[in-house]
Image (tube, rainbow, N blue to C red; front, side, top):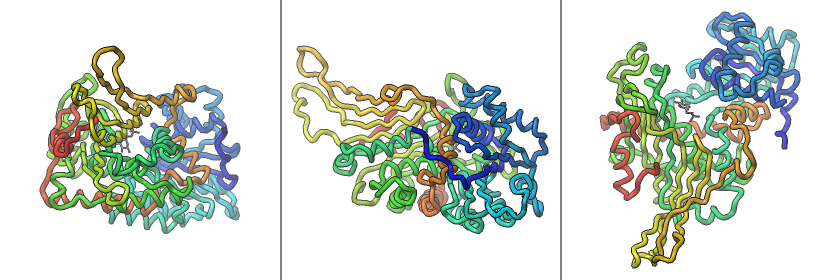
Length: 500
Ligand code: BG6
């Protein structure tokens, strides 16, 4: 079934930061794929805006390289690219200069009397520029009721700075025109989690503290900070990953069934989860939150530098090679509501870990009594494992009898749901394809509302304050390991262990 059409009032897309890293890796390849699928309206214009002076040919060359080096390289063909690039114009802008957005206006709205703009603005720039760009857009006359603005995480570095950004954005756009992207919500496997929970009746009676022992949400990466040291060092894993991606996953696992799959119904339920997070503060800082920083080791079979030896470490103004920025976080999170009281949610994320593995593991309570104990057969609790990446797979582990005439012997067997097996193989899409299409279709269900950002920051601020006041610094872990041993102890204290 083809997706709903893009409303006719959506005429053009302006990408600020058009030559940046995200635009190159994700956004141009995603826009190209949407065009190849015939999902961009015929007259839809794409404007790339950045500070460099580039000719149309130079910019087209960059876009072509971006597609060829991306996950969508296999979609490339000259005819499709020629058609795509014909929609694209590059415009050099100086956002600091008065009237700096005039070149964009001249491209898109040459007739000043034009009353309908219908332009989507994607701000793929440093977050410090969001406010300034929004105000300049408002003053340029390019914003109208049909406009939308897309902003990337991180929105701020704490509650106060997030509020400043949100206020500046709100000076130009109403809340329903603002699309805050968390690209994890564009992943097929993450959307499938919503379907799994709310399109099946068998899970709901078990989806609570009566049946569930613990939940683990783990986003493990093998990459280091690559060339992003200055950004990363000012940010750290808690702000970079937990405040956004991990808390969004937690919301999808923990939220109540929304009344419908509409933006406000879904987001109303997600924000209630964030409001119910028990603050990690005081004595809980030591027992509920672990920070780590990688040291040299072996990752992916190769020698890997430690965080402090990464390219760019200490080079940025104000940065120091004795940085205390965390590249790993593990948390024990408690949700104070009826459904989840007493069920720990363990969150873990880190760079340079042993494997790239993102998954949600829901461990059910053990069987109340083991009738096989007398013959020495142990029982393992059932687990629903939702693998998000690199493999997408849902597995329910069940105890089975091993075949044979011997005394009963039990073993764990996974009931595996493979989407490729069920629906046939399909191209794995870049998460941004889905997110961009939803922006064009004006569907904000998978975007983060302002109150969610605020609630998430309020909770994260508490942990950052706690680390600061208790003087906790990140514990070292070798690149290629699963993080500091303190992260293992975090669970072991409660008789739990990480699923790996
Ligand atoms: C980004 C973070 O939001 O997500 C990066 O800034 C991280 O540090 C990335 O590497 C992970 O995304 P994915 O889709 O590769 O899991």
